[in-house]
Every structure is written in structure tokens, then in C-alpha cells.
Length: 208
Image 1: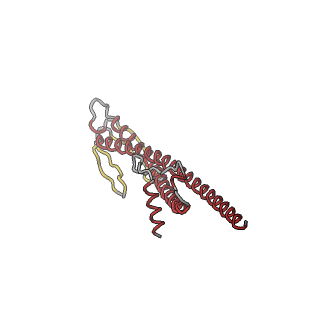
Image 2 (image 1 turned 45 degrees about the horizontal axis):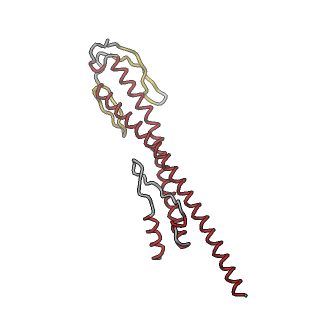
């Protein structure tokens, strides 16, 4: 038991502690198997450790994929809302000077399949109501709403970019650990064959 703990601690010390910008650690790459493990007794603990690391990276990959999917659903809604606010400003909303304040007819969504008609008076459109989630809606001055939506869109696009970078990074780490696992396993097979050949050779010597 003490030997296993010692081997795991040794494996820990060999792990590269670098990480990507979001703090996801870089997986260790085993360049020289013979220097990474000094005996067969160290192989099994390291194989187990690599499998545990692969499982953790896969868990992070699944969570990142879900987060990216959520952002891909959210970004079109934010962009559509921002375009609507920009259109209202262009029509004279928010007290913008030197803009002809025009009324216009439009339809707006009440439900997934239910729409209603409305006439918007550009001269009186000084604020808009935005859904913030959790059944919360707040009124914002139209210019403030535009700034808020621009900030949300920029943050969502940046988050999506980070998610995509993280998914690529995680796949690379999983591949690295799978290569490490294969190399350690093959090295263990080589050592077993060598030990068996030495044992057979020793047996032959004894018979002589």
C-alpha cells in the first residue's frame, strides 16, 4: 500500500503543471518510458492514473460542449434583440437628434406560434423592456439597452470562442494520455516477455 502511494506521488511529480488560459492543466507527455518508470511495479499505478485523468478531461469536454451549445442558442437571440433596438434608434427612438421620427407597423411574438400587430410611434419610444431570464423583465433607456446588448453579445461570442479553444485543447490532452497509456502498456508487455525469457533461460541453466 505504501509502495502504491509512493508510486502515485512520483507520477504526480512528473506531471507538467502548465495550463491553458482557462486553467485547464496540460497532460504530461511520456517521451522516454524507461526513464518515466523505473520498474514494472510503477506501470500499473501510472496506467490507472492516466485513465483517471482521461475521465476527468472527458468530463470537462462534455461540460464545455454543453456550454458551447447553450451559447450557440443564445447568441442569435441576443443579436436579433440588438438589431431590433438599433432599428428603433434609427427610427428616432431614445431622443436621437437629426433623425426623422417615424411610426411604423410591425408584428411581435406573443408565443411560439402566436403573433400580434402593433404600431410603434418613433417619437415616443424612449425605452425598451428586456427579458433577463428567470421570468424577469426590466425597462431600459433605449441607448442603455443597446450598450447592454452589445456587451452581452461581445461576452457571449468571446465565451463561445473560448469554449471552442478549450474543446480542441481537451481533445489534444486526451490524445496525449491515450498515447501515454499505449506506450506504458506496450512497455509492460515488453518487460513481461523479457522476464519470461530470462526465467526460461535460468531454468535451462539449472537443468544443465
